[in-house]
Amino acid sequence: MTLAANKNLSRIQKEKRSTIKKAALEVFAEYGLRGATLDKIAIASGLTKPNILYYYSSKDKIYFDVLSGLLDEWVAPLHEISPNGDPIEELLGYMRAKLTMSKQKPQESKLFATEILHGAPLTQNVLATSLKKTLDEKVAVINKWISEKKLAHVNGYHLFFSIWAMTQHYADFDIQVRSILDQSEDDLFKDAEEYLTSVLLRTLDAKAP
Image (cartoon, rainbow, N blue to C red; front, side, top):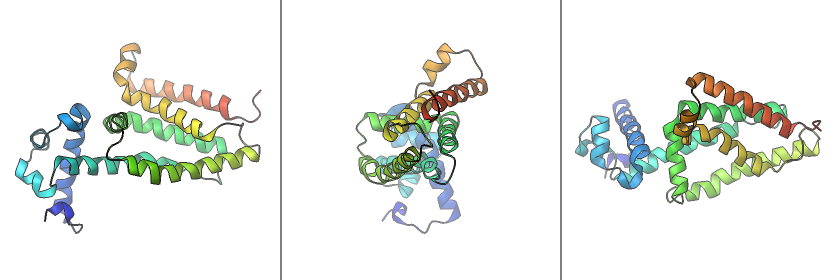
């Protein structure tokens, strides 16, 4: 049995696994699942291939572990949307959280995008179950806000799709963005936040003409 099956990991073992996943993220983001190899992950992590196999039985196991953690982070801001908060502020806060993720974790965003573009072979079940359940719950909240005339009439699902597209673009297509805009990273994301805020305010304000 490999150590990957053991949930009672020591601090050092957890650190080793963390090192492997961090290196694997870089390799997977650059080469994709097919192009990535255990040898490349070993070089990036500074560990030997046998050492990696002590913690993970295969490349696919590492990939799934990395993606699982990434998906948890990706979904987390959705859970923060409170039905008891101000609707517009809650949704603007969600947009800002997603934009911050694009700024701080572009590799993670690109890896997730690559997984989706390839048909989500390892995460399809999660997307169709836990993500859908969470999204359904948040769309129900939006629909309640609309019925209370706190938000303009919008399709909640397409609103979230739009927020994902508008925020993740800055990570997934960062080369395109930086080729066009000659700005520092901080200025770029400051301008992006201001623009997306104005777009969402016009879209969500129930009092807007």
